[in-house]
Length: 443
Ligand code: GUN
Ligand code: ZN
Image 1 (cartoon, rainbow, N blue to C red):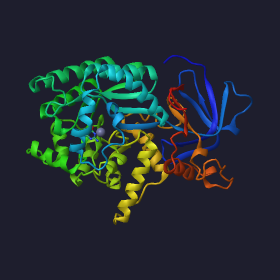
Image 2 (cartoon, rainbow, N blue to C red):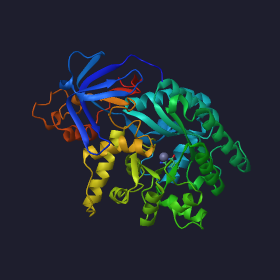
Image 3 (cartoon, helix red, strand yellow):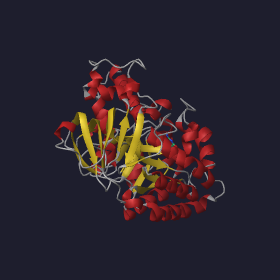
Image 4 (cartoon, rainbow, N blue to C red):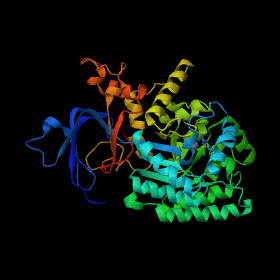
């Protein structure tokens, strides 16, 4: 990593802690060293003498770890907000495949830089993304991520059964798709000291043959890259998978037979799983990208999240734009919380998550899902300095009216994070940093 002058930020700090719970400093200091790592996190009052590095005073803003979006679709951003309530397969055919068909290199060069700025403006410092099927558009997307500074995992979408690329003969797709994906992985996986990584990305079982699933999983295994796909999102999709893979006992078994499960596998949605499938997810160490805003938008279903957590499945959050209408992971937290509330109204007695639990899921759990919990996900010394600064005054119930001193959110971390989730304001993210380098995007 290039050396930059060290600096420190004085602000209020809230972060999940690696050994459980959360840390809250009302007046804290985050020190970033020349290598872009967090040197120390402390109460400002603990500082003895004059600090050795410049201190930027951002009070009364709040620093949080950068948000981790485990699942979004780069080419789909222009469609965000369209098609609510359609079933998944109709929505894909009507809105998404035509859009992705146009995501060529030139379109990616135009759109990807704006997408990375928008992600940073939403507070996301790590994004796990699907591209389209065209190799040059993936190179363009990686180049844009490299220049922007965001941390990103990206993959070329692989589809050899149902596809929108009518320039290819179906029989040619398997080999071409594997070769192009392997080449992209060779060029980009691990670039810039691991800031950019590759994910082999078979779209989902409906659009992939068993051969493509197996071969892509084998490539992920041999390269150490990730493997990402969709799982059990929509009931029409489930019926189609059962028809296409009659030898499999259930949806997860399709991926299991392809040897696609494991610690580097990120499965989006996974909301209609049986007890057997949940146990197998936990046993195999596979990760879930929970996308509750998307699940509500397309009326896909309500994930009974507590079952997964009780079984020990590792769950992080995804925006799933454009089935999710917004990039904000605060929005995903809010949708997730509403979903759990609705399940409780419907009779589910399992405990609901609190605001700090949602914050953890959108940061440290997302990092764990990527195997990066030693690198990012919390404000702790030794980690790389991926963090965001927020202006909480934009979330108070009466905009323009200063919150009273006894407002709970001014002293209590749980209340503050509750406001950030349930009254998230598009402009509240004022800065986003990766490895101590400020990203373009937040205003
Ligand atoms: N399943 C297969 N492709 C997609 C997609 O693009 N979005 C969502 N939400 N689900 C999918
Ligand atoms: Zn998706």
